[in-house]
Image (cartoon, rainbow, N blue to C red; front, side):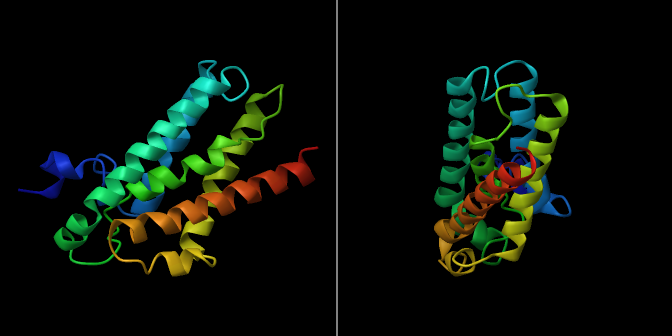
Amino acid sequence: MQPLHRPKFLLPTTFGLGHLPASGTWGSIPTVVLAALLIAIGLGPVASPFLYHLVLLVVLVVFSLATVLRGEETEALYLGEDPSEVVADETAGQCIPLFALPIGMDPSFWRVSFALLLAFLAFRFFDIVKVWPANALQRIRGGWGILLDDIAAGVYALIFVQVVFALVMR
């Protein structure tokens, strides 16, 4: 039986997205789409901050737990450390720069679009480059090692997005 058809692997692969080429990018997209949908229906960080942040927190916790709890099992299944098929860590890490999306009190379409795109690109950059301590965290074995480098990338992306908006979008 293919891992995709086993329910216990649906969350670690973010519902099978981890089996696509450029899997880390695909694993990050659902979180950005979710944030965009919440903003579009009036439940964004300005209009409904509690609900917006609660939804992102639930995604962060659920996909983090999926990564940690299934980490060793997925490494055994996919025959390697931090297998590319496991993208729940990207799904979780992408939440972090979206928590403090700097769209201001009057969020225009272009400002929101720029913020979402910048958060996505910054997270992907820091996830790929692995700036210290992300590179050291990735060497931890099992699910924690799979997850923690992406959490660090999320924090770096959050800081980067805030700095860019502070300098460019005054």
